[in-house]
Amino acid sequence: MRELNLIPYEMKEKNIKSQKNRKYASYGILVLCIVFIIAYFPLVYSNNLEKKATNIKIELDNKAYITENYNQVVASINGIKLPISLAEEVDNNKVFLSTTIDNLSKYVPKNINFTTFSYQEGGIYIDGESSSYNSCCEFIANLELSKEFSTAIISNINLEEETRIYSFTITIPQKGVANDEQTK
Image 1 (cartoon, one colour):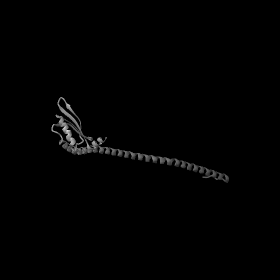
Image 2 (cartoon, helix red, strand yellow; image 1 turned 120 degrees about the vertical axis):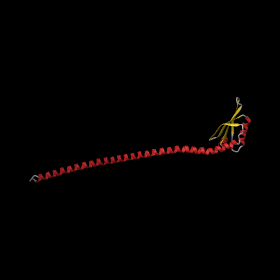
Image 3 (tube, rainbow, N blue to C red; image 1 turned 60 degrees about the horizontal axis):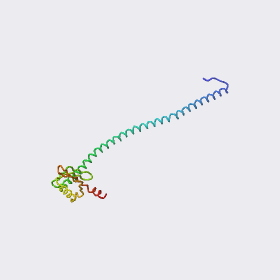
Image 4 (cartoon, rainbow, N blue to C red; image 1 turned 90 degrees about the horizontal axis):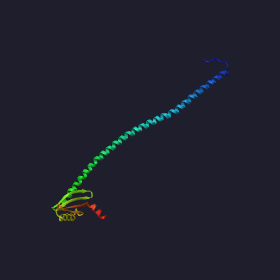
């Protein structure tokens, strides 16, 4: 209850003072609310950004896992393609080599024996031996007169004194390779 004060100025002054106190209190509460809002929203925004960053990191980790799996699958596929391509190349060369050997056998004299026969990208390489020097010369002459082996080159003919056997090395470059070497 209020006191009954018959002095109106004093009451008026008390009311003004009370209103000022309420006004200051409300300003103080308002300032605290504004400070709280100013401090709270950046904190909420910061937390929101941290959550987004965490989600993005998780997503990137998942994508990195997918990328790693993709790279493993590609490596596996490439590992399988290599033997397949080698097998196809061998199959293609098998036909070429079998016809080449068949054609080559037409030009080999009877007393010529091959010790090594190899096919590489540059051509065919033959090491052989014969009991007659003339057979070695006849073999290379037959090759040079043929259409398929006209680029044949004999590297050397050596006589082994103990066995009286002539050893020789013949190179038959591929047509494109022989032409390139001759133009150099």
